[in-house]
Image 1: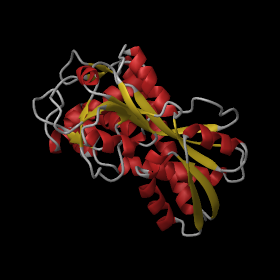
Image 2: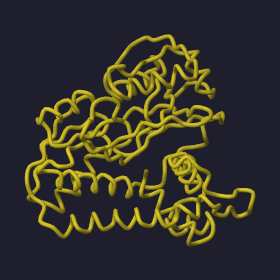
Image 3: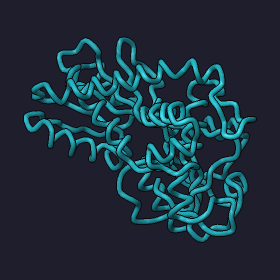
Image 4: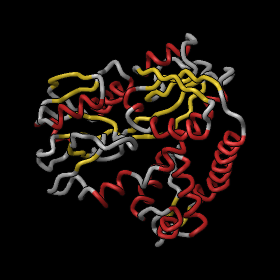
Length: 316
């Protein structure tokens, strides 16, 4: 669950409307609406009475306010304590490739600036392999895409949720995601990767049977093939990192989105658990410092939604 979403939720409870909260958190009102839908999906309950104008907190929403405030205050205390303490040592960190080219560099830059005596040794690999290396004591913490296998006795700290979307060549027609999958060869993200398994379940749940043309191991490779017109693919829509050198069209699926969840896994009683907590705080802060959610940013700066006749380009 995003601390950013909880802060916006509290701003609505204090300001009395989505518009007032948007001014407080410096985002568009449409971006605030996207955040609240994501929060409701996460908690599994409707939090607002939308039959009123402006929408008001319902009973479930009012009940969440004190818990949300407690969570935000606890997060702030955690980061304050980390900043006040002397943080030093050697953290052996593993991460999936998409994080290494996404949010992680910003977090590491912030950590190096705050804690010059902390050294991070970075290894890269698929989620399953990283967790296995963690369980064998070869790594101190790992950043993985969901936690589908193993993890007994390990702490799981999610910091980011990314919706799965269809990506298509820049000159592809403005059609629904399901129509594009049926019209183009399909470039699959490796099923051995946990995000690949998540994508596979999405396709089966939607009863989509694409004509596979190739299987690749990295989001960058998938994006390059799609950009050059070799097919379409399903990937997580990344919220951080540098924009891609090779743009593609991004088309959301109809209905409820399926999300990839990124998180840190580490042994809670490990001698370096404190360093892992510093990493988690830095990753969450890096996500918090990112501008408004992609849905809002895409509407503002990169053209209309994919249902329009114009093309939409976005980072994956």
